[in-house]
Every structure is written in C-alpha cells, then in structure tokens.
Image 1 (cartoon, rainbow over the protein chains, first blue to last red):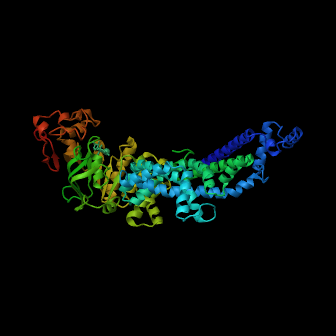
Image 2 (tube, chains in turn blue, green; image 1 turned 180 degrees about the vertical axis):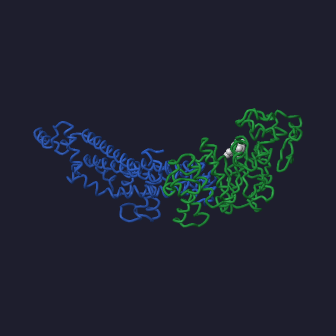
Image 3 (cartoon, rainbow over the protein chains, first blue to last red; image 1 turned 60 degrees about the horizontal axis):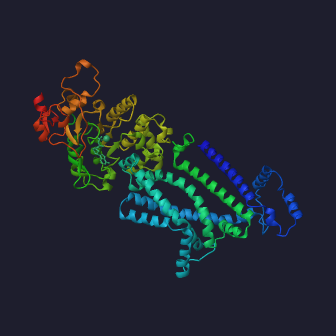
Amino acid sequence: MLRYILTRLGHTVLVIFGISIVSFIFLHLSGDPVGLILPQDATLEQIAALRKKMLLDDPIYLQYFRFLTSALQGDLGRSIYSHQPVVGMILERMPATLELAFAALAIALAVAIPAGVLSAVKRGTWIDTISMSLALIGLSMPHFWLGIMFIMVFSVQLGWLPTSGRGTFLQLIMPSLALGVSLIALFARLTRSAMLEVLGQDYVRTARAKGLSDFSVIGKHALRNALIPLVTVIGMEFGFLLGGAVIIETVFAWPGVGRLIVQSILDRDYPVVQAAVMMLAIVFVTVNFVVDLLYVWLDPNINIDGSAA
Amino acid sequence: MTRAEDQSPLLEIDNLVVEFGRVGSVRRVVDGVSLQLAAGETLGIVGESGCGKSILSLSVLGLLPSGARVAGGQIRLAGESLTGLSERSLRQIRGNEISMVFQEPMTALNPVIAIGEQIAEVFRTHQNAPRKAARLLAVEALRAVGVGSPETRVRNYPAQLSGGMRQRVMIAMALACRPKVLIADEPTTALDVTIQAQILELFRELRQEFNTSVLFISHDLGVIAEVADRVAVLYCGVVVEEALTADLFDNPRHPYSRGLLAALPQPDAEEVPEQLFEITGTVPAPDALPDGCRFNPRCPLATDRCRSEAPPFLTVGPAHRVACWEAGHGQ
Ligand SMILES: Nc1ncnc2c1ncn2[C@@H]1O[C@H](COP(=O)(O)OP(=O)(O)O)[C@@H](O)[C@H]1O
Ligand SMILES: [Mg+2]
C-alpha cells in the first residue's frame, strides 16, 4: 500500500515537472516579453538593455532552469500591468475557484449516485426512464447557457437568488449548479451502468442469501463495487470542472482564477494567464493524486502488489 | 442411515414448478419436483449441468434470477410454507434458518469487503450482535471451519485467499447462525481434487457437530456418494429416481442413473456391473423437451410408450422410487 502511494506520488511529481516544461515553452512562444513591457516606440538600445537585464539571451535550458528555481520558490513572474507577483494574485483567487468546483462536484455526486442507483434497481420502470431522460437533457445543455437561464429565471424573474458575487451560500447555488448539471448527468449514467453490472454478480446474490436488507445489499455490497469505476472518472472530470469554472465565473462574476484568466487574456497579461493555467493544472494533478488514494480505500485489492488485482 | 424414514420432513418441496419467460414462450425448468429433507439428513441432488439443480435450490430461498418465478407447488420449512412469504419474512429465514453455499467461492464473496466483516454482518443481521461482538463471533466461525489464525484472517480480502480457503469462508458464513438447513450448490466443483476432498471432509465433520440438514447439489455422483444419505436424480427439471445412496449405487433403476454411474471412474474394472452404459447426447433445452419420458432420445431402452407417455414415479423398494417404464421390468 505504501508502495502504491509512493508510486502515485512519484507520478504526480513527474507530471507537475512536465507541466512546468510545457508552461515554460508556451511562455516562450507567446512572444518576447520585452515587446510587451516596453512602450511601442522604444529604441533598439533600450530593447537590448532590457533583454540583457532579463537574461533573455542565455541558452534556453539555462532560462528554463532559472524559471524552475524561481517557480520552486513560488515566483512565477509579475503581472505586466499591476506589477504584482502573479502567484499572489492567483492564490488569492484560488479558494473561490476551488469552492465553486468542489460545490459543483458535491452537488453532482449527491444527486447522481442516488439517481443512478435508483435507476439501476428500478431498471426499465418509469423511474428509470425519467431519470435517464433527464440525464440526457442535462448532458446536452452547455453550462454557460444554463447559467444565463438560471440568472434570467431565478434572479431576474423570480428574484430569489443574487445574480453574481461570492460570499453567501445563496450566491454559491446557481454557479455551482450550472457547473454541476452536466456532471450529474454523466455520473448518474455511469453509476447506473456500473450498478447494473454489479447487481448481476454472484456476491450480490450471496448478500441476499445471507438475509441482509435491501439497503445493505444495494448500498453496501453493490454500491462499493460500483463506485470504483465512478471514482476514476471523478479525477478526469475535475479538469472539466476547472475549465468550466473559467466560463461560469465570468457569467456569475465569481471572483476566482477563471475570471482572472479571462480578464488577463483580454488584457494580454500573459504572465498571469500562463501562471494561472499552470497552477490550475497542478490543482488538477493533485486532485487526481487524492483520487488515487481514494481508490486504495475503495478497492483493497490494489494494496496487494501495487496494481489492481 | 434411514433417519429420513422415521421423521417428518424438515424441508419439504412439494410438486414445485419454476418457469422462465412470458406467456407463449414459457420454459419450465423445474417441473413438479417433490423432495423431503429430514432433520440431520444429507440429501444429494445429482444431474448433468442444465437439469435445473441451481434453479431448484434458489427457489427455496426466493432467490430466483429475474425472469424466473415459482409457478406452482409448495416449499415448507418445518411445516410452514415459504412460497407465499413476503420478502421481509424471507429475509429472516435466509442465512438464519436456511443458508446457501455457492459454487464459485471466487465470485460469491464480495471482493472489496474484508471476509471478517462479511461474516460478522450475518451475526449483526440475525442476532442483533453489536459490532465488536460480531467481529469476535466471525473469528470463532472461521476457527470452526478450520481456518488457521482466524484473528488475522478476518482482515483479509477474498483475493488474498486460496479457493479452498474461500469456500471455507463461505461455509463459515452459511453456518454462522446454525441454520436448520444448508443448501450447498456444487460447493466443491470449482476446487481441485485434494481441496475438494478437504471440503467434503469438512461437510461431514460439520454435520456431525451441528446436525444440520444438508441439500447437497452436484453434477458428480462421486462427490454425492461421499456425503449424502439419500440421492435424488434430477433430469430436465424432473426427479427420475430417488434412493438411499447405497441402494442407488448397488441397484440403480433408471437408465439415466446408470449412465451417471457408468461415467464415474471405476476403481476395480472387474466389478463394473453390466447394466451400466455411457450416456450419449446432451440435455435438451427446456423449450425443446421431447414427448413422453424426457430421457427417451438418449435412452437405450426406450420403447414407443416411452416416446409418448411420461412414466409415473413408482416405489420399487424401501425408500426407492423411480420414474421409468422399463425399470420395473429390468430387474
Ligand atoms: N437466468 C436465467 N435465465 C434464463 N434461463 C436460465 C437462467 N438460469 C438458468 N436458466 C435455465 O434453467 C435451466 C436450469 O438451469 P440450472 O438450474 O442453472 O441448471 P444446473 O444448476 O442443473 O446446471 C437451464 O436450462 C438454464 O438454461
Ligand atoms: Mg448449477
């Protein structure tokens, strides 16, 4: 088990290292920062001087090494406009984004797992048909559109919920729901098919033969096995949540990293964009590491030799 | 060995019919089976694969797969009918008064739950044992079926155990609440020969210790001979012969029983009784049953009557009954 965790940790570090290389390359391809920093009419001498000052004439591996060392010290450069360190700007907004993403994930799981289980258990009945039709509809609605619809109905028409901002629970409802709906649909369908497969297994029959209640047979013996494929997908879909947050945060004026990214793209504030993307990627990789740990808990057979039995 | 004769049956299956499918395409896979199991008795049920042994055994606890239903007959435990019971009442019997052990110990245990917990939940369900007590009872249950160092074994998952060990766990689980009846559906079929012998030995020991009645199902008469007091031979959902184990081996009446016996490895070639023969062909599907006696297309003794009229189940000796037109004349 320890070996498994260390292996996964090793992978995670390796992937973050890879992300740093890709980020560095993109930073490089996005153009000469000197041109952005200096005014349009700067002289060649001024440009050359700044290049020298920023050590841009060094070989590329040396520049990457410097980038990596300062990144490891928490320095990913400064905003071209505000001249603030970008890491600080991003960290300040990260909690809002994580709050949104995890709220959406929690809503998705809380609705999808019971719905998927119920559909599987009541397979072929109207409950199954209705919940799976709803899932299909949910899957086909883009979240930004859903967000706008929510605002129009619940804020503008009914006046129940605030249109934007962060701070209160009421403000969290619409953005997290808009972000979570398609995941509800996806997870519900996944839970249903995993449950259908598991319900036909011999060990479910054994559990019944022992005289256990339906709640225990389904909620314990079947569900624990059905959750294993679901957990894999959660890790993957967290990337979708972070990507979706970029748009949803803009729709709901949610003060997170996503909104910062959009604003910085419009401002051509590349260091901010690049660092924000890199940090979201690190969040994504970290979440996947946690998911791998969850696996150990769900599927004890992983413990045995570091791979699934 | 004749305990069956002098006691009223503990488990009674009376003219049971189990069907699959909807009106128009109904397949009867159990067709009028009647069996009695006395207290402390082990009744073997033998027949080739597809004869309906598993469906018959699952119907006792109301665990039939979806699509199957009991279409007629009664099942009684100590005189109380099980066939009309609600799910709720059945749950109190399952694992408590009647338990099952299945063929595949690999897939019959939950792969993601520790075996100790899988046993302990039986105690919690039926005896209201608190968590800690149930855990200790699980350790004792494992010890009772010959699992070494049960204190540490309880934390194992099925994948960490050998096939024989898993089957011991299944048996420990089934016997946890000292059921009156244990139904074992091919409990040794998936195991290799030495392990099979150990598990059969365990069945004999446990019977002596707990006096549990056992319905022991196998396609292998050799296995049945090791444990059963009495044997019922099942063919295409019908009991074709029923006898004390020794009688069936000494004096098999139904050509199908003789065929099954002939298929056993003979320890002493000179003693092969001449009335034995190889069965050819395969079990017909339940939707393609022949008229008359169901065995007639594969039977070397079949006559015109066998092909048109199903034979009655007649007594031919003490505790010995057979459904065959020719069996009575053959001896
Ligand atoms: N889930 C099922 N759906 C449809 N038919 C089934 C199912 N299970 C068993 N049967 C049919 O019922 C008959 C008896 O099967 P089974 O009781 O499993 O035989 P045995 O245990 O003697 O090998 C077979 O013809 C089989 O095809
Ligand atoms: Mg079977």
